[in-house]
Amino acid sequence: MRPTDRSTESISLLLRPHMIDTLAIGIVLGLSAGLAPGPLLTLVISQTLKHHLTEGLKIALAPLITDLPVILITLFVFTRLTSFELILGTISFCGSFFILYLSYESLKTKAIEIAVQDEDPKSLRKGALINALNPHPYLFWCSVGAPTVVKAQQKATYGAMVFIVAFYFCLVGAKVMIALVASRSKTFLAGKAYLFTMRILAVLLFAFAILLFKDGLRLTGMLQ
Image (cartoon, rainbow, N blue to C red; front, side, top):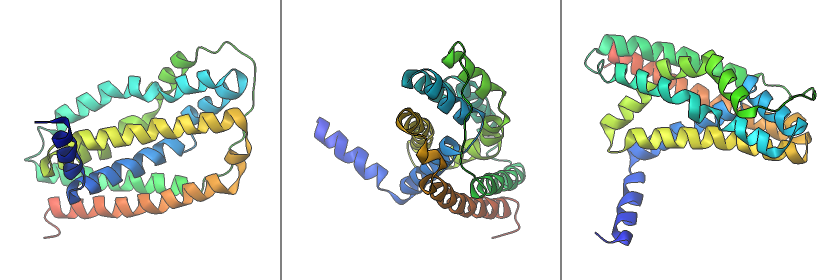
């Protein structure tokens, strides 16, 4: 098969309805996780302001290091639960409530202010430690990420890969963008554009929470 044929086939796969849904969910969840205020985003900004853009970018890459074991373990468990619909339905309910919580957090986001203090960077180590101690990645992959990946893979070839790549591309990409903005100006983080973006993500997260809740109803037999 020629390279052009492979490219055409790859594009046609991504344009299938199930793939578009999976891609959209990965993008929304990734952007939400990447832009949401929290210890990792705060560290991205503070390290960028205190030291250099490079230090902020190191922090932004931390999830790629610390999340891998969580992903592998949760996927290993969930691939063995695909026949236990009651359990999966219960997990979908939990995921729905967790996403509703994230939606609420995005909705009440306020301007970010960072206090800068001089200290040794050690950015990558700090970022990995903070992300490893943050409960959000564990809650996300146990209640939302792993079930979404398994569902995506069942519906379409390469579905799992599409979701994971889209999610982490947007998560890390959002933090990289924040580091780039912080290295030039603090006004974006305290301005209306950032707050408006978080409000839009809150609405999209709410919609996804409803879809997860419907999945829970279907898997538990409450909805046909």
